[in-house]
Image (tube, rainbow, N blue to C red; front, top):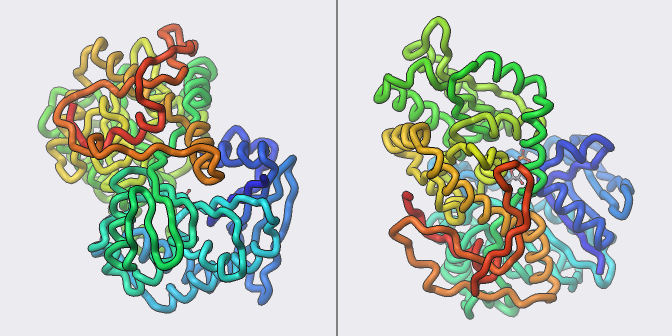
Length: 517
Ligand code: F6P
């Protein structure tokens, strides 16, 4: 079997890139290396040549096949339909959704062009794994060209209910194309329920357990909560304390003994950055004893800045941070620092480890890997506390975080205070439970589990209805039968065996309710 991965953007690795690439890119590359494979998608470049060449670049066992977009395609397919219609809609932001027929035509056109190019590269026993909302109709376009291979799709962002999706013109036609996939992976059980509900309500689909029949096709829809390279990130963070990268060293020097609250997000309205700044201001106003003793560092690399809503967020976040610093700061203390640039994974791991509080408060998020990275980076002997939005997919697994409603500035402010005052024993207890959870469902587990389900190598057990009921109290994560690694207080990782009737996949899928511990 050869694996073909398709994603909107494809980054061709250079020699240094291994160290900076995120967990998903590394995990997919590893899967491709293992099986031998092809990674297909947009090069990230723009060229207006009438015929768009496919460039193939070989790296080890993997062929990267990339194409440029024309400026018109970038406007309609990427900025327009993907990021001004689908992105806000999928993040429950109907008010921001801007639908233009011409963008939708451009979106379909790029999917058709990708399918045409890809179809000529596909061999008989290839397994195809397509990622992200930019490429929903790609399988249908491939099927139209006679491709009969197994094709899977993974949806990295939330999937809202049929009521919300149904507001999109042509939503029934678009969603029906989902049925061309053999397996659809979502981040959470809520997303699974919403997608299946949408297929039933908008496309006349019929559900049979985790399978949905639409017309003549049957598709399996399951939750595969994405993880990170927990062990790798833990190692990065441990190393950062010994060989502090320059930004971290400078931050340490300027902070001195002050406590640090950290947020790291692409500059995107779904991440709740402005609301987070306001909540931090509320915390300082309602708990003045903390003034001068704690700072918020918000790292927010700019993203999709050609989309007007992102440009507005850029302006607004500066304005809010400026206002709060002017109102609450002192000549020798800046309460909030917003840094709009990207840092290396090394530096991020160091910031997370230095921060007493990780503030991860998206208004809506498919999973949110920063929450997992923050936990993986902590010093087991003196860990920080994660404050996590109930609307991040990660909240369904990471129950020992302080779970908050990001729309309620007072609640977030209270959680920051609670986190800063939390006794060490409780911090360690919460950290250990969280670490165990994320280590049991890391990025390798995710890749393997998805590919096993797609290739039919493993039956993936369904999720029992009982686990979908909201929980009403603090619980430790379910014990699992896997051997996983847990960091010891000396910072080295030890193998620990956890006993339970539950399988690791059940563990990750089981944390469905939002509970404030
Ligand atoms: O979370 C969805 C996603 O499309 C990721 O796959 C991607 O890395 C991220 O958003 C950033 O998107 P863009 O390519 O638009 O910068």
